[in-house]
Image 1: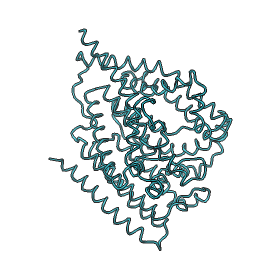
Image 2: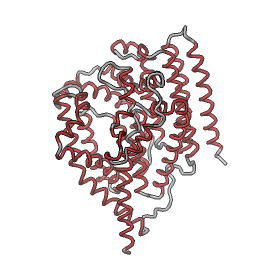
Image 3: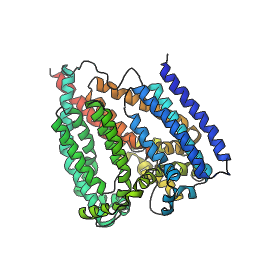
Image 4: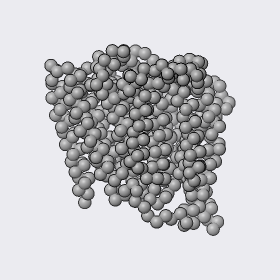
Length: 487
Protein backbone atom coordinates (compact mmCIF):
# COMPACT_ATOMS: atom_id res chain seq x y z
CA UNK A 1 0.00 0.00 0.00
CA UNK A 2 1.28 3.47 -0.88
CA UNK A 3 2.61 5.63 1.93
CA UNK A 4 0.13 8.21 3.30
CA UNK A 5 2.62 11.01 2.73
CA UNK A 6 2.90 10.07 -0.95
CA UNK A 7 -0.88 9.98 -1.32
CA UNK A 8 -1.14 13.52 0.05
CA UNK A 9 1.56 14.76 -2.35
CA UNK A 10 -0.16 13.09 -5.33
CA UNK A 11 -3.56 14.44 -4.30
CA UNK A 12 -2.21 17.98 -3.92
CA UNK A 13 -0.54 17.69 -7.30
CA UNK A 14 -3.86 16.72 -8.84
CA UNK A 15 -5.52 19.65 -7.08
CA UNK A 16 -2.98 22.11 -8.50
CA UNK A 17 -3.59 20.69 -11.97
CA UNK A 18 -7.34 21.25 -11.66
CA UNK A 19 -6.92 24.74 -10.18
CA UNK A 20 -4.49 25.70 -12.97
CA UNK A 21 -7.10 24.83 -15.63
CA UNK A 22 -9.75 26.88 -13.84
CA UNK A 23 -7.49 29.90 -13.30
CA UNK A 24 -6.21 29.69 -16.86
CA UNK A 25 -9.77 30.00 -18.21
CA UNK A 26 -10.55 32.89 -15.85
CA UNK A 27 -7.33 34.77 -16.63
CA UNK A 28 -7.68 34.38 -20.40
CA UNK A 29 -11.30 35.57 -20.25
CA UNK A 30 -10.33 38.71 -18.28
CA UNK A 31 -9.33 40.61 -21.42
CA UNK A 32 -10.20 43.98 -19.87
CA UNK A 33 -7.32 43.57 -17.40
CA UNK A 34 -3.78 44.17 -18.64
CA UNK A 35 -1.55 41.15 -19.17
CA UNK A 36 0.94 42.66 -16.71
CA UNK A 37 -1.67 42.69 -13.93
CA UNK A 38 -2.76 39.15 -14.76
CA UNK A 39 0.85 38.00 -14.57
CA UNK A 40 1.09 39.57 -11.11
CA UNK A 41 -1.81 37.40 -9.98
CA UNK A 42 -0.30 34.40 -11.73
CA UNK A 43 2.94 34.82 -9.77
CA UNK A 44 1.00 34.41 -6.52
CA UNK A 45 -0.34 31.09 -7.77
CA UNK A 46 3.11 30.12 -9.07
CA UNK A 47 4.72 30.81 -5.70
CA UNK A 48 2.13 28.66 -3.93
CA UNK A 49 2.75 25.87 -6.45
CA UNK A 50 6.49 25.97 -5.81
CA UNK A 51 5.90 25.88 -2.07
CA UNK A 52 4.01 22.63 -2.69
CA UNK A 53 6.83 21.31 -4.90
CA UNK A 54 9.66 22.13 -2.50
CA UNK A 55 7.82 20.90 0.60
CA UNK A 56 7.04 17.66 -1.24
CA UNK A 57 10.73 17.19 -2.05
CA UNK A 58 11.75 17.64 1.58
CA UNK A 59 8.99 15.27 2.70
CA UNK A 60 10.07 12.58 0.26
CA UNK A 61 13.83 12.91 0.66
CA UNK A 62 14.29 14.01 4.26
CA UNK A 63 17.02 16.23 2.89
CA UNK A 64 18.15 18.10 -0.22
CA UNK A 65 18.85 15.74 -3.11
CA UNK A 66 18.69 16.35 -6.84
CA UNK A 67 15.12 17.57 -7.18
CA UNK A 68 15.36 20.73 -5.05
CA UNK A 69 18.15 22.42 -7.08
CA UNK A 70 16.49 21.17 -10.27
CA UNK A 71 13.25 22.93 -9.30
CA UNK A 72 15.16 26.02 -8.21
CA UNK A 73 16.65 26.28 -11.69
CA UNK A 74 13.20 25.80 -13.21
CA UNK A 75 11.99 28.92 -11.36
CA UNK A 76 14.70 31.03 -12.98
CA UNK A 77 14.47 29.56 -16.46
CA UNK A 78 10.69 29.29 -16.72
CA UNK A 79 9.61 32.43 -14.89
CA UNK A 80 12.60 34.79 -14.80
CA UNK A 81 10.97 37.21 -17.24
CA UNK A 82 7.69 37.09 -15.30
CA UNK A 83 9.49 38.58 -12.29
CA UNK A 84 10.95 41.33 -14.45
CA UNK A 85 7.50 42.18 -15.86
CA UNK A 86 6.01 42.45 -12.38
CA UNK A 87 8.83 44.18 -10.51
CA UNK A 88 10.72 46.21 -13.12
CA UNK A 89 8.78 46.44 -16.35
CA UNK A 90 10.73 49.55 -17.36
CA UNK A 91 13.69 47.26 -17.99
CA UNK A 92 11.99 46.00 -21.14
CA UNK A 93 12.13 49.48 -22.64
CA UNK A 94 15.74 48.64 -23.51
CA UNK A 95 14.89 45.24 -25.02
CA UNK A 96 13.73 44.67 -28.59
CA UNK A 97 12.44 41.17 -27.92
CA UNK A 98 9.85 41.87 -25.22
CA UNK A 99 7.74 38.71 -25.09
CA UNK A 100 4.55 40.56 -24.12
CA UNK A 101 4.73 42.46 -27.43
CA UNK A 102 5.57 39.38 -29.50
CA UNK A 103 3.42 36.63 -27.94
CA UNK A 104 -0.39 36.95 -27.63
CA UNK A 105 -1.64 37.28 -24.01
CA UNK A 106 -3.68 34.05 -24.21
CA UNK A 107 -0.55 32.10 -25.26
CA UNK A 108 1.47 33.68 -22.44
CA UNK A 109 -1.14 32.59 -19.91
CA UNK A 110 -1.65 29.15 -21.45
CA UNK A 111 2.08 28.55 -21.41
CA UNK A 112 2.51 29.81 -17.84
CA UNK A 113 -0.21 27.55 -16.46
CA UNK A 114 0.97 24.68 -18.67
CA UNK A 115 4.39 24.84 -17.01
CA UNK A 116 2.81 24.66 -13.54
CA UNK A 117 0.74 21.64 -14.61
CA UNK A 118 3.82 19.93 -16.03
CA UNK A 119 5.79 20.50 -12.82
CA UNK A 120 2.87 19.18 -10.73
CA UNK A 121 2.69 16.08 -12.93
CA UNK A 122 6.46 15.74 -12.67
CA UNK A 123 6.16 15.74 -8.88
CA UNK A 124 3.39 13.13 -9.00
CA UNK A 125 5.60 10.79 -11.04
CA UNK A 126 8.54 11.52 -8.76
CA UNK A 127 6.46 10.78 -5.66
CA UNK A 128 5.17 7.49 -7.09
CA UNK A 129 8.65 6.00 -7.43
CA UNK A 130 10.70 7.74 -4.70
CA UNK A 131 11.40 5.42 -1.79
CA UNK A 132 11.01 7.41 1.41
CA UNK A 133 12.75 4.71 3.43
CA UNK A 134 15.94 5.40 1.44
CA UNK A 135 16.71 8.70 3.15
CA UNK A 136 19.65 10.66 1.82
CA UNK A 137 21.81 10.39 4.92
CA UNK A 138 21.03 6.89 6.24
CA UNK A 139 24.05 4.62 6.48
CA UNK A 140 24.69 0.89 6.54
CA UNK A 141 27.86 -1.00 7.42
CA UNK A 142 30.48 -0.32 4.76
CA UNK A 143 31.26 -3.41 2.70
CA UNK A 144 34.44 -2.18 1.06
CA UNK A 145 36.55 -4.97 2.51
CA UNK A 146 34.76 -7.68 0.54
CA UNK A 147 37.09 -8.94 -2.23
CA UNK A 148 34.72 -8.21 -5.11
CA UNK A 149 33.94 -4.68 -3.96
CA UNK A 150 37.59 -4.01 -3.20
CA UNK A 151 38.60 -5.19 -6.69
CA UNK A 152 35.86 -3.14 -8.38
CA UNK A 153 36.82 0.01 -6.49
CA UNK A 154 40.47 -0.54 -7.47
CA UNK A 155 39.62 -0.74 -11.16
CA UNK A 156 37.16 2.15 -10.86
CA UNK A 157 39.97 4.37 -9.60
CA UNK A 158 42.42 3.12 -12.24
CA UNK A 159 39.98 3.69 -15.12
CA UNK A 160 39.23 7.15 -13.74
CA UNK A 161 42.89 8.10 -13.67
CA UNK A 162 43.50 6.58 -17.12
CA UNK A 163 40.64 8.57 -18.68
CA UNK A 164 41.82 11.73 -16.95
CA UNK A 165 45.41 11.35 -18.19
CA UNK A 166 44.22 10.67 -21.72
CA UNK A 167 41.61 13.46 -21.87
CA UNK A 168 43.06 16.38 -19.87
CA UNK A 169 45.32 17.73 -22.62
CA UNK A 170 42.71 17.38 -25.42
CA UNK A 171 40.08 19.02 -23.18
CA UNK A 172 42.24 22.08 -22.43
CA UNK A 173 43.49 22.23 -26.02
CA UNK A 174 39.90 22.31 -27.24
CA UNK A 175 38.72 24.98 -24.83
CA UNK A 176 41.71 27.21 -25.64
CA UNK A 177 41.09 26.64 -29.35
CA UNK A 178 37.47 27.76 -28.87
CA UNK A 179 38.70 30.79 -26.93
CA UNK A 180 41.03 31.79 -29.76
CA UNK A 181 38.16 31.48 -32.25
CA UNK A 182 35.99 33.62 -30.01
CA UNK A 183 38.61 36.32 -29.83
CA UNK A 184 39.03 36.35 -33.59
CA UNK A 185 35.46 36.03 -34.90
CA UNK A 186 33.09 36.28 -31.90
CA UNK A 187 30.83 33.74 -30.20
CA UNK A 188 27.86 33.60 -32.60
CA UNK A 189 30.10 33.36 -35.64
CA UNK A 190 32.16 30.65 -33.95
CA UNK A 191 29.07 28.58 -33.17
CA UNK A 192 27.89 28.81 -36.76
CA UNK A 193 31.20 27.73 -38.34
CA UNK A 194 32.97 25.68 -35.63
CA UNK A 195 31.92 22.24 -36.88
CA UNK A 196 33.26 23.02 -40.36
CA UNK A 197 36.45 24.44 -38.88
CA UNK A 198 37.01 21.35 -36.73
CA UNK A 199 36.53 19.06 -39.72
CA UNK A 200 38.69 21.11 -42.07
CA UNK A 201 41.45 21.59 -39.50
CA UNK A 202 41.70 17.87 -38.85
CA UNK A 203 44.65 16.48 -36.92
CA UNK A 204 44.69 16.88 -33.17
CA UNK A 205 41.63 19.16 -33.01
CA UNK A 206 39.58 16.43 -34.72
CA UNK A 207 40.81 13.88 -32.18
CA UNK A 208 39.69 16.13 -29.32
CA UNK A 209 36.08 15.62 -30.47
CA UNK A 210 36.41 11.99 -29.42
CA UNK A 211 38.68 12.20 -26.37
CA UNK A 212 37.93 15.56 -24.70
CA UNK A 213 34.34 14.66 -23.64
CA UNK A 214 35.81 12.04 -21.26
CA UNK A 215 37.45 14.82 -19.23
CA UNK A 216 34.61 15.66 -16.87
CA UNK A 217 33.36 12.06 -16.46
CA UNK A 218 36.94 11.19 -15.51
CA UNK A 219 36.94 14.02 -12.95
CA UNK A 220 33.66 12.71 -11.51
CA UNK A 221 35.21 9.25 -11.14
CA UNK A 222 38.29 10.67 -9.42
CA UNK A 223 36.19 12.80 -7.05
CA UNK A 224 34.02 9.83 -6.12
CA UNK A 225 37.07 7.64 -5.55
CA UNK A 226 39.08 10.25 -3.66
CA UNK A 227 39.36 9.89 0.12
CA UNK A 228 41.82 12.69 0.86
CA UNK A 229 40.82 16.33 1.13
CA UNK A 230 43.88 17.62 -0.71
CA UNK A 231 43.05 15.39 -3.69
CA UNK A 232 39.47 16.68 -3.80
CA UNK A 233 40.54 20.30 -3.58
CA UNK A 234 43.14 19.76 -6.32
CA UNK A 235 40.38 18.38 -8.55
CA UNK A 236 38.12 21.31 -7.64
CA UNK A 237 40.96 23.65 -8.64
CA UNK A 238 41.29 21.96 -12.04
CA UNK A 239 37.52 22.33 -12.55
CA UNK A 240 37.66 26.00 -11.53
CA UNK A 241 40.53 26.77 -13.93
CA UNK A 242 38.81 24.99 -16.81
CA UNK A 243 35.54 26.78 -16.02
CA UNK A 244 37.18 30.21 -16.09
CA UNK A 245 38.54 29.51 -19.58
CA UNK A 246 35.27 27.97 -20.76
CA UNK A 247 33.21 30.96 -19.60
CA UNK A 248 35.41 33.23 -21.72
CA UNK A 249 34.41 31.18 -24.77
CA UNK A 250 30.77 32.17 -24.09
CA UNK A 251 29.62 28.64 -23.19
CA UNK A 252 27.23 28.72 -20.25
CA UNK A 253 25.06 25.61 -20.28
CA UNK A 254 27.87 23.25 -19.22
CA UNK A 255 28.20 25.23 -15.99
CA UNK A 256 24.83 23.94 -14.80
CA UNK A 257 25.66 20.34 -15.71
CA UNK A 258 29.03 20.47 -13.95
CA UNK A 259 27.65 22.31 -10.94
CA UNK A 260 24.89 19.74 -10.38
CA UNK A 261 27.27 16.79 -10.73
CA UNK A 262 29.81 18.33 -8.36
CA UNK A 263 27.07 19.19 -5.87
CA UNK A 264 25.79 15.58 -5.84
CA UNK A 265 29.31 14.16 -5.44
CA UNK A 266 30.23 16.60 -2.69
CA UNK A 267 27.02 16.68 -0.65
CA UNK A 268 25.54 13.25 -1.25
CA UNK A 269 28.62 11.02 -1.56
CA UNK A 270 31.21 12.75 0.62
CA UNK A 271 29.73 15.05 3.27
CA UNK A 272 26.36 16.01 4.70
CA UNK A 273 24.76 19.21 3.42
CA UNK A 274 24.58 21.81 6.19
CA UNK A 275 22.36 24.88 6.48
CA UNK A 276 25.33 27.17 6.09
CA UNK A 277 26.23 25.39 2.86
CA UNK A 278 22.66 25.78 1.57
CA UNK A 279 22.93 29.53 2.16
CA UNK A 280 26.24 29.58 0.30
CA UNK A 281 24.73 27.69 -2.65
CA UNK A 282 21.83 30.15 -2.83
CA UNK A 283 24.32 33.02 -2.88
CA UNK A 284 26.14 31.30 -5.76
CA UNK A 285 22.86 30.96 -7.67
CA UNK A 286 22.21 34.67 -7.08
CA UNK A 287 25.70 35.54 -8.35
CA UNK A 288 25.12 33.30 -11.40
CA UNK A 289 22.24 35.59 -12.37
CA UNK A 290 24.76 38.42 -12.59
CA UNK A 291 27.18 36.22 -14.53
CA UNK A 292 24.74 35.32 -17.33
CA UNK A 293 24.47 38.82 -18.84
CA UNK A 294 28.17 39.50 -18.26
CA UNK A 295 29.04 36.49 -20.42
CA UNK A 296 26.56 37.66 -23.05
CA UNK A 297 28.17 41.09 -23.17
CA UNK A 298 31.70 39.76 -23.49
CA UNK A 299 31.35 36.68 -25.67
CA UNK A 300 30.49 38.52 -28.89
CA UNK A 301 33.25 41.11 -28.56
CA UNK A 302 36.15 40.26 -30.85
CA UNK A 303 39.68 40.49 -29.49
CA UNK A 304 38.87 40.64 -25.77
CA UNK A 305 41.86 40.11 -23.46
CA UNK A 306 42.00 39.48 -19.73
CA UNK A 307 42.53 43.18 -18.98
CA UNK A 308 39.65 44.07 -21.31
CA UNK A 309 37.37 41.76 -19.33
CA UNK A 310 38.44 43.45 -16.10
CA UNK A 311 37.87 46.96 -17.46
CA UNK A 312 34.48 46.02 -18.91
CA UNK A 313 33.46 44.43 -15.61
CA UNK A 314 34.21 47.70 -13.81
CA UNK A 315 31.80 49.53 -16.16
CA UNK A 316 28.88 47.11 -15.83
CA UNK A 317 25.54 48.58 -14.84
CA UNK A 318 25.02 46.51 -11.71
CA UNK A 319 21.73 48.25 -10.95
CA UNK A 320 20.04 46.40 -13.82
CA UNK A 321 22.24 43.30 -13.76
CA UNK A 322 19.85 41.22 -11.65
CA UNK A 323 16.97 41.99 -13.98
CA UNK A 324 19.14 41.22 -16.99
CA UNK A 325 20.01 37.87 -15.43
CA UNK A 326 16.32 37.11 -14.86
CA UNK A 327 15.53 38.24 -18.39
CA UNK A 328 18.24 36.04 -19.94
CA UNK A 329 17.42 32.96 -17.88
CA UNK A 330 13.71 33.49 -18.50
CA UNK A 331 14.15 33.20 -22.27
CA UNK A 332 13.33 29.53 -21.78
CA UNK A 333 9.72 30.55 -21.23
CA UNK A 334 9.76 32.04 -24.72
CA UNK A 335 10.82 28.65 -26.09
CA UNK A 336 7.85 26.95 -24.43
CA UNK A 337 5.38 29.67 -25.43
CA UNK A 338 6.70 29.72 -29.00
CA UNK A 339 6.20 25.96 -29.32
CA UNK A 340 2.68 26.12 -27.90
CA UNK A 341 1.83 29.02 -30.22
CA UNK A 342 3.18 27.46 -33.44
CA UNK A 343 2.74 23.74 -32.92
CA UNK A 344 0.92 22.16 -34.73
CA UNK A 345 -0.47 25.17 -36.64
CA UNK A 346 2.87 26.08 -38.26
CA UNK A 347 5.15 23.16 -37.39
CA UNK A 348 3.38 19.79 -36.88
CA UNK A 349 3.92 17.57 -33.86
CA UNK A 350 6.94 15.33 -34.32
CA UNK A 351 5.23 12.38 -32.59
CA UNK A 352 8.35 11.12 -30.91
CA UNK A 353 10.85 11.55 -33.75
CA UNK A 354 13.34 13.41 -31.55
CA UNK A 355 13.03 10.65 -28.94
CA UNK A 356 13.81 8.05 -31.61
CA UNK A 357 16.66 10.25 -32.81
CA UNK A 358 18.15 10.38 -29.31
CA UNK A 359 18.21 6.57 -29.27
CA UNK A 360 19.73 6.37 -32.73
CA UNK A 361 22.31 8.98 -31.72
CA UNK A 362 23.98 6.33 -29.60
CA UNK A 363 24.92 4.54 -32.82
CA UNK A 364 28.05 5.40 -34.80
CA UNK A 365 27.42 8.16 -37.34
CA UNK A 366 27.53 5.86 -40.39
CA UNK A 367 24.61 3.83 -38.96
CA UNK A 368 22.30 6.76 -38.18
CA UNK A 369 21.09 7.45 -41.70
CA UNK A 370 19.06 10.66 -41.97
CA UNK A 371 19.25 11.10 -38.19
CA UNK A 372 22.80 12.39 -38.64
CA UNK A 373 21.66 16.05 -38.71
CA UNK A 374 20.77 16.82 -35.10
CA UNK A 375 19.42 20.29 -35.96
CA UNK A 376 16.46 18.55 -37.57
CA UNK A 377 15.19 17.79 -34.07
CA UNK A 378 16.40 20.81 -32.10
CA UNK A 379 13.53 23.03 -30.97
CA UNK A 380 15.81 26.05 -30.89
CA UNK A 381 16.73 25.59 -34.55
CA UNK A 382 13.16 24.85 -35.64
CA UNK A 383 11.15 27.42 -33.69
CA UNK A 384 13.54 30.32 -32.94
CA UNK A 385 13.21 31.83 -36.46
CA UNK A 386 9.46 32.16 -35.79
CA UNK A 387 10.22 34.51 -32.89
CA UNK A 388 13.61 36.13 -33.49
CA UNK A 389 14.65 38.02 -36.60
CA UNK A 390 18.32 37.93 -35.62
CA UNK A 391 20.89 35.17 -35.44
CA UNK A 392 20.07 33.97 -31.93
CA UNK A 393 18.05 31.10 -30.50
CA UNK A 394 15.76 30.72 -27.53
CA UNK A 395 16.87 27.21 -26.63
CA UNK A 396 14.41 24.64 -25.40
CA UNK A 397 13.39 22.61 -22.33
CA UNK A 398 12.04 19.18 -21.49
CA UNK A 399 8.55 20.75 -21.31
CA UNK A 400 8.82 22.30 -24.79
CA UNK A 401 10.24 19.06 -26.18
CA UNK A 402 7.43 17.01 -24.65
CA UNK A 403 4.79 19.28 -26.20
CA UNK A 404 6.52 19.34 -29.59
CA UNK A 405 6.75 15.54 -29.62
CA UNK A 406 3.40 14.52 -28.19
CA UNK A 407 1.13 17.56 -27.98
CA UNK A 408 -2.01 16.59 -26.03
CA UNK A 409 -0.24 13.50 -24.68
CA UNK A 410 2.74 15.44 -23.33
CA UNK A 411 1.41 15.13 -19.77
CA UNK A 412 2.01 11.38 -19.91
CA UNK A 413 5.59 11.99 -21.05
CA UNK A 414 6.18 14.42 -18.18
CA UNK A 415 4.76 11.82 -15.75
CA UNK A 416 7.23 9.25 -17.11
CA UNK A 417 10.01 11.82 -16.77
CA UNK A 418 9.12 12.29 -13.10
CA UNK A 419 9.07 8.52 -12.62
CA UNK A 420 12.55 8.32 -14.20
CA UNK A 421 13.86 11.00 -11.83
CA UNK A 422 12.41 9.08 -8.88
CA UNK A 423 14.09 5.85 -9.96
CA UNK A 424 17.36 7.71 -10.57
CA UNK A 425 17.33 9.28 -7.09
CA UNK A 426 16.55 5.89 -5.54
CA UNK A 427 19.50 4.36 -7.36
CA UNK A 428 21.76 7.24 -6.33
CA UNK A 429 20.82 6.92 -2.65
CA UNK A 430 21.20 3.15 -2.72
CA UNK A 431 24.62 3.49 -4.38
CA UNK A 432 25.63 6.00 -1.70
CA UNK A 433 24.47 3.70 1.11
CA UNK A 434 26.34 0.70 -0.28
CA UNK A 435 29.31 2.86 -1.40
CA UNK A 436 28.83 1.56 -4.94
CA UNK A 437 31.13 3.91 -6.85
CA UNK A 438 30.22 2.64 -10.33
CA UNK A 439 26.46 3.03 -9.91
CA UNK A 440 26.80 6.42 -8.20
CA UNK A 441 28.99 7.67 -11.05
CA UNK A 442 26.53 6.68 -13.79
CA UNK A 443 23.57 8.21 -11.93
CA UNK A 444 25.46 11.45 -11.24
CA UNK A 445 26.40 11.69 -14.91
CA UNK A 446 22.75 11.11 -15.88
CA UNK A 447 21.30 13.60 -13.39
CA UNK A 448 23.92 16.18 -14.29
CA UNK A 449 22.88 15.96 -17.94
CA UNK A 450 19.17 15.95 -17.07
CA UNK A 451 19.69 19.18 -15.13
CA UNK A 452 19.98 21.11 -18.34
CA UNK A 453 16.63 19.73 -19.43
CA UNK A 454 15.22 22.90 -17.89
CA UNK A 455 17.03 24.87 -20.63
CA UNK A 456 17.74 22.56 -23.57
CA UNK A 457 16.69 19.51 -25.57
CA UNK A 458 17.33 16.05 -24.18
CA UNK A 459 18.56 14.79 -27.55
CA UNK A 460 22.20 14.27 -26.55
CA UNK A 461 21.71 12.84 -23.05
CA UNK A 462 21.38 9.14 -23.84
CA UNK A 463 24.46 9.23 -26.06
CA UNK A 464 26.46 11.06 -23.39
CA UNK A 465 25.49 8.61 -20.65
CA UNK A 466 26.15 5.53 -22.80
CA UNK A 467 29.49 6.64 -24.27
CA UNK A 468 30.98 8.46 -21.29
CA UNK A 469 29.27 6.68 -18.39
CA UNK A 470 28.21 3.15 -19.27
CA UNK A 471 31.22 2.30 -21.43
CA UNK A 472 33.81 3.12 -18.70
CA UNK A 473 31.79 1.15 -16.14
CA UNK A 474 31.48 -1.85 -18.46
CA UNK A 475 35.27 -1.70 -18.71
CA UNK A 476 35.53 -1.52 -14.90
CA UNK A 477 33.20 -4.52 -14.50
CA UNK A 478 35.05 -6.54 -17.12
CA UNK A 479 38.46 -5.93 -15.57
CA UNK A 480 37.04 -6.64 -12.11
CA UNK A 481 35.73 -10.02 -13.28
CA UNK A 482 39.08 -10.88 -14.81
CA UNK A 483 40.81 -9.83 -11.60
CA UNK A 484 38.54 -11.78 -9.23
CA UNK A 485 38.61 -14.91 -11.41
CA UNK A 486 42.33 -15.09 -10.78
CA UNK A 487 41.75 -15.28 -7.04
